[in-house]
Amino acid sequence: MPQTLSFRNALDQASGGAAIPLALAVGGTNLYVFDEYGRLSTSTGAGATIEFPDAYTRGEAWELRFRTADTGNGQFQGIFMQVRSDVANTSTIRGMELEARQGAAVALGGLEGLHANANVASTGTGNITTVKGISANVSLDDTYTGTITNLYGLHVKLQVEDGATITTGYGIYVEQEDVTGTASGAARLDAVIGVKSTSATAGVFRYGIDSTATEFTNGSANEVVLWAFKGANGTTYYLVHDTDAATVLGVVTTDPTT
Image 1: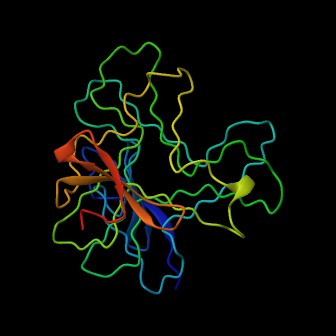
Image 2: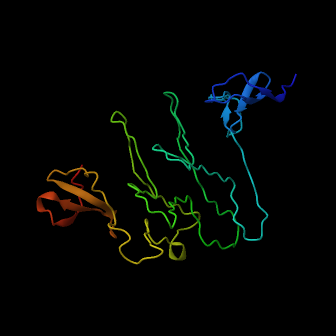
Image 3: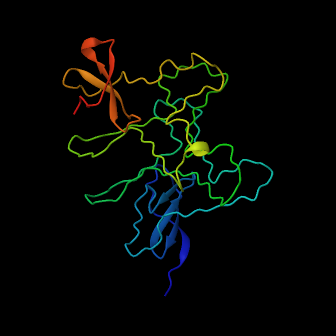
């Protein structure tokens, strides 16, 4: 006999003060629980894991697809979410928190906290002014006069355990891939990193790169490698600063930190 999908009052009150939880259930199993404040959680008021069996063949827990037919040049979002606080709060207000988690000692092919893709799927022409894989923005009101101790347009934090083995690791990794042919000429990219101010032409940034909060690996004679790059002859070169000769920069072909 097929199971039925129904709404029912949920006895679980563990939603942090909610009194009237309402559950969307299949048979006797709660799938989603709503409370009178508008909170949505899985399985219970406090939230519990919904498990998908190995035989389940669809590759996502939620599948949402939208298409807009707007020709009036209106901005359109697949999902818009705003989290707002109008009272003092010394903690953190997050728009969203995402986690992809390895929950047990099992091998995984990959683990991504967030995958964002701006897909240019046209098979022909169709000019696009700007394509962004991900946009990270910080906005200040024009009347704001407070003090922001730390401001990051994009903050990447890596928690690394010394018992782990990391074959290759980067704080930020930029990879280019050719679709067909070789991306040169008109398809060539200008730089790995570009910096621009839309208003002032000078004085907006103090440094090009600030790495003073950490010390790079020291070589055998107190050298640190500022940059490893490939020359026109195919040789790998290392731009080196020697701490013993503080004002000297040199280029060598052997990595002094190995």
